[in-house]
Length: 463
Image (cartoon, rainbow, N blue to C red; front, side):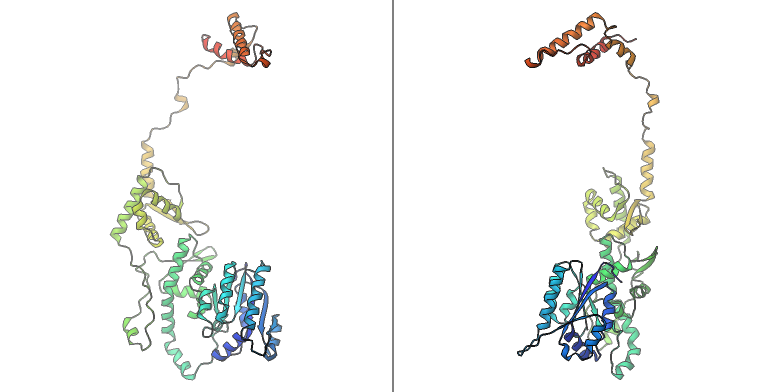
């Protein structure tokens, strides 16, 4: 899948990749197939190859046709085994420092000496791809890059085989392919659990990038599929995953009933009869939850929501649901510590009508209250008395009319005792002020008059 955000710089250790392909695969290096495979990952910004071009023959002309800049390896009398490796590493680090728009590097070659360069580029937040053959590329390089691109997959597996191997391939090809698919199922389930923990929709592109994060050597072509979509459809036929269409995207989910959808186990007698050494044991999927225990946990979830002092704010995401359970019932939160256990409990609560699960536009799971939670809340709201109506309030204190207050403030209609009271209060206020402001006596009817109006309004009999 093409990542439009990747700006890729390609560095080719020509002598290493050319000799490796020729000696292990009996093929000529197809540089066009290598570049086409890199273009599927992003936009190639620059291409540089390092080698002794005096002895490269026709490869120099082929590389020039693809606009690859060729750097001559300096040959010294004492030998120059690592000269090209040093120049390649220095140029790659210089480009990482000076060309900030380049965020991905491709190293074409299988030499383990480049592992230090790979780790340093990863420290500077650069994505690192390694292109090489499975037989001549160091396992350290294959396991520590972001994605290992096998040269055998790029050229379509065109490899010279002995005649007897070609004849035996059709007889055991189907069984080998089926066995390989079953071996990758645990990795796919692990990747889906990772996406579920991140609350990310399990789209095809995200699932493949997660698989590459967990195992950089993964490629759908290793399992007889030309595209990742064909590969995941082949996995769905085994019952290990379910596919659903969401708009223009295809989503991959783990089946709800884990026991019924597990792929068929490989017969034990066949493995014992095989003369080849037994493969490493593959971790078996976890057993389905006990129905009685799951029913007890669903009732416990119901009780948690019923006795919660602070009502939850709906809808909730999985992370918020975990925080709510942790705050109200520590024991229940410990029982659902794993993301798979929590999802199983949420689906069981949905079947019991306690919760309702839906996905938003981004594919993230949201939790809504189910009918079993909404019904008790509705019953409680019916028993509560209605709030008082403003029309039912009959006893309201009489509020003085604004016209009456205006009459009280008017000096012409003010009575003599009231005016004398205002004068006394103004004199007391003036005496309390500093000496510099003692001469500024407020006139009746300003700020002091307002306070006097309140007193008069309180003592004046109501009409």
